[in-house]
Length: 429
Image (cartoon, rainbow, N blue to C red; front, side, top):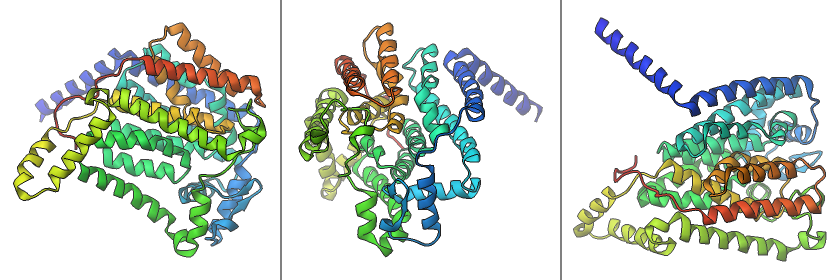
């Protein structure tokens, strides 16, 4: 017994020594503590600004009152346009806080710290940034405001998205897909991550694994939406998953330089969608599937493996051998693919409101350090993006500058060499 206790003590001491030898880990803990204090000061001394909170509470009150028709769930900013998960989350917030702003700010402060801890875990796992650059994750005035002074639902959506990504880099794909679906149920912007995620799933799992993971994600959506789908299915689907919404030109941070008649036109939306698809396919072919010989060759290999799996019993042995060749993806490759895929979607989004900055802010330091730019230029680009998001109201000049900064980052990512995607020939879980 004494020997066992001694062994456990030595193990714990060894782990502690390992943590303190890692500057990324030590600095991450310091950042979390410092930012927690900063959040407390913001809540205590910076006035809260009501934007969507009252609308959220009105929609939740209707839901708790038994209303299941989405067209009747409204607030002072308009009808409810988010999937069902939003209602469950904010109903829980209302239960905990009584609908009061101050306790909700404290709750969102905790949410901010949890989200920061998760994103720091991802950064430490990938080890792309130097330790000091992790501080950039805590230096956004706009993001602090989004979390504790605005209480937007984007905060919960991105927390779950980052939790999903953390699960995936630790090879918990099915859990990651369930959490990802939960994030989508709060706000649909998370679907910008869906194309790169599907590509990564095809790399990391056989077809049965992909189907079961997608089925788990779909089940989450079905269960959450069930009360509304049973009662008023068309109303729910048309409101919660409305891909054709046109945002007000005045509130947009990007493409403000585009005249409003063009901005709201269908042709402009279609042009951006085409640009989005072309960029995704280009990065998938030349960057994300570079080591597999390109996107087409990779997809062909996937089709071949599917045919082998579902062929006659004489091919079963070949199929099993094929399964053994599945490889574990590097955390760096997973995070790079996901962050770049989302960033492409952000660039091609017709309208970005101020809270939408949370969609990609936490990926910015990572993306900048994946470029081959010198450190000074990386910092200039980071400061420039933050500057644009803190100009209110946005104008044509800030909008043009933001687009140029985004394109500069994207060009740096395109010009950077692709990392080798695989860890080993071990089969994934």
